[in-house]
Length: 251
Image 1 (cartoon, rainbow, N blue to C red):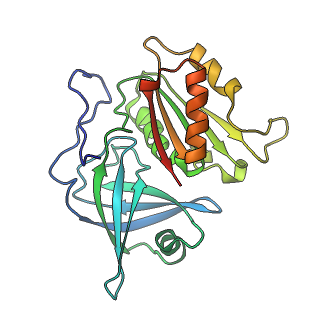
Image 2: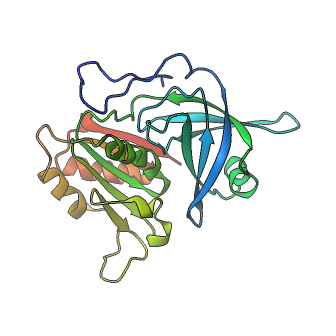
């Protein structure tokens, strides 16, 4: 895993971003400025980070909390915000049962609190906006993918982008208010009347591969280990080249 990523110079198209190399390796102070509820178990935390050098959609950071007694906890979290949100970053966190860091954020954090962040990290899962992107995520795996969707909108990019997002039900769908025509939600346990219930399946993936733009898709998959395996198998079965599938998994 590398600390910085700069898109190849041959991608001289709108949306290409360069990330500075000077700040990714050092800790910076981030001040919590707002909390936005997304679902009963997930919330977005907005931070002011004046020296933040920018990031690429899909990258993550390392977060550090230090208790009064000196105890330190560190976690990796995907960045939810678009790169153009200068001086600010957003993280969307699930409230994990027994999680000391997520528990602190959901139960104790208040605007004005300060933490430390380091990044951006990893270029493998980054999407600089230079090629058609097919995004597939489940649960909180949609977080880095939403950064890509927001970047696509903010820059008015002409490259194709599609998002398949899986959630247990409408009330568990993170960022539900933000999705547009580019997004197809799939519900695994409960759904609005007339909407089928089930996992993301070949019937969802195959039509997108059949209608791929010239040059095909760059596919990005994010979710649990089981979901990542399932989604990547569907992509390969539908004809997506293995070397054009990028996976970020957790759990």
